[in-house]
Image (cartoon, rainbow, N blue to C red; front, side, top):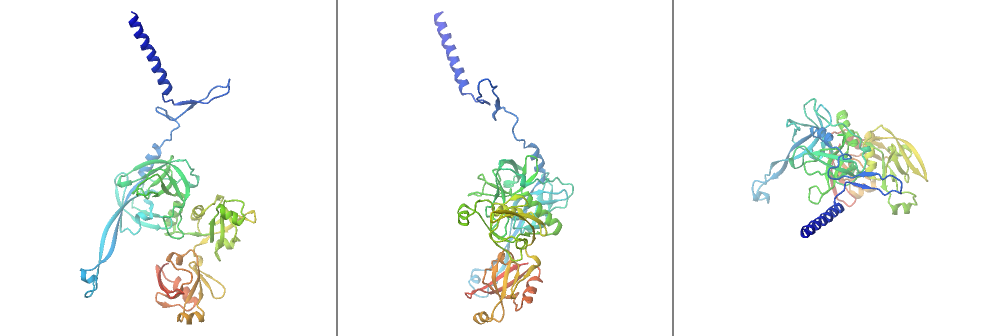
Amino acid sequence: MKKYLQIFLIAAIGGAVSLGLYKAVERRNTIYYSKPEGVPVRQVALYGPGVQGNLPDFETAASVSVHAVVHIKSEFEKKSLVYDDFFQFFNFGNPTPHEYISPYSAMGSGVIVSADGYIVTNNHVVQDAVNITVTLNDKRVYKASVVGTDPSTDLALIRIDEKNLPFLAYGNSDDVKIGEWVLAVGNPFNLTSTVTAGIVSAKARDINILGSKGAVESFIQTDAAINPGNSGGALVNTRGELIGINAAIASGTGYYTGYSFAIPVNIVKKVVDDFTRYGKIQRAYLGVYYREIDDQFAKDKGLNSLSGVYIDDVVAGGAAEKAGIRKGDIIKNIQNKPVNGKSELMEVVSQLSPGDVITVAIVRDGKEISMPVKLISENPGKMVAMSNNRIQLYGATFEPLGEQDKARYRLNNGFKITRVEPGKFSEAGVKTGFILVHVDRRDVSSTEELKDALTSREGGVLIDGLYPNGMRAYYGLGL
């Protein structure tokens, strides 16, 4: 009996010890805040196994989004010159190269933004495509036509011939908050209707991927996973509203590594509206040269704050100059939206149109002033007359070549470019100091001839001339 009693007691003690250890290490779904004596303890729910509630609900947003996001297949043609044989390549005989066309294709995504077939995607998904095929989530297939492309925002609008399509409603990207849950919907790796979730990591990101001067980069950064094929897809909030168009990832491998970037929907709305109403982008122009304010610059200039952007100069005849904005002013906000850098400034202005009157808050001599500014087109009237026979055209300032320079360069005519601002000439790569001699191989000798040669043509022109070091240069100017 004593032997059995000892075994029982040992087992009981072992069980009690085991239970005590389990209770000490078990995972708890609640914590208790320590309160002063006499105050009731409040139980606080934590996320954990079996805990329901307080969790974001993605089901509604996902079910709405997948039907409005499409798969895009773009077909391209790469053209190259091919010689008939090895010897002709080295000019043995008369070389007779012929054109060889290599077809290739790329995949992407798009978002239906209206029931009558308008679809937004990235410019890099469809630019220069010879054939575009759109596949809906229900597997219907359509041929699409390009309504317009805008490399400066990396957006494009295409259309399919169909009615009563499911589409996404626009949200407001200005209201998006850092830390907010979002969904990315697209077709990565050719896998249709893929939904991933994450949060907004940052706003107004400039990652310098579009390259061209005047490009609008003010991305929403998220950690929702996107990969090749997601380009042009939707970034939506938990209500299923479109807040961005997925465009890029930051990665050393080409695949998702935690950083995704989307174009804010407020920019998207402006691009879609311009293409549907005008057939082209109506770009507004503030007309300022500016720089961001860092700690050292603020110390050098004696500034009391790091907020805003500093005006280095204003464009002659531009909207800012006409409104009274001067060099040395600091823009604090536009339309009550804070402006602290290039990306924020570009994002705000890109949502506006020529003719809009906006309120710009500046700081001058320590005092904040609000100014009404009427925005103008990037090339107002295509030409601004200036004093002493100088003219400004497409962002470039010209002055007639003097007799001394004509003799020096052995020219009978020409115009010297004394300044290059953002515009057609800067986009073509023309530098200050270039001497324009011919337009489409014709002499230009007077300001009227120059104006007529560059404003009466559609599509583009070829300009040629030389630089002060004697180097000849040729440029294709898109008009």
